[in-house]
Length: 220
Image 1 (tube, one colour):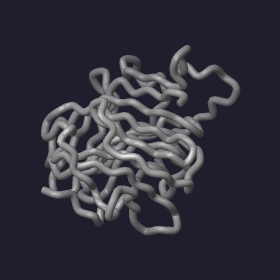
Image 2 (cartoon, one colour):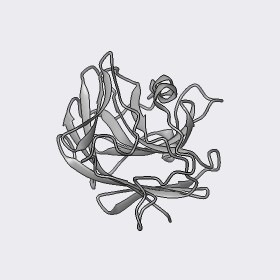
Image 3 (cartoon, one colour):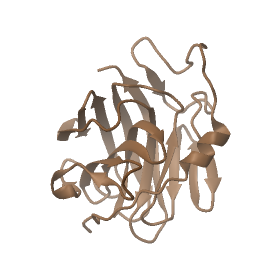
Image 4 (tube, helix red, strand yellow):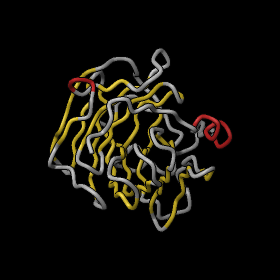
């Protein structure tokens, strides 16, 4: 099924962020490496400080060496942030649909300031993709892809399958690659810095679970 253009992003992350926030201050970041600004294979129990929760069918949990996002509220996105602050980044993650309708959306977040201001880089279980923007001045997500809707690509593995997602937020340039193939690039200057994260949504009734692993953030 083609993903609806009226996908409304409503986050529950803000309250959880406020409750779980931590100040890294001048302390060394345990998840920064010689080659990456941030890297997490989720093998250690939340060493990197992700926001975790389990509430009314919405959950972000670290289980069996991966971040598992569960969502059952159609048309709403559930996400987790890593409590960092970056300007220009390239984000890589391995994402796998575990259960739920293929009419879904999952991917990564960059330049997250609060639940009303961030960028989304999404693919779906039925082969669609988008780069979206959420900002306080608009009640809905704004798609930056052509015709303000999801586009289709046969490079996206469909159904219960794994996709390698690569999102770049560099200056005003935003780009998305899936399984090593660029699928879309655009420019937008609304958001300039912020947090990183992963998120998932189902766009029809049912419970969707998406598994995220090998999450990394690189300097351009």
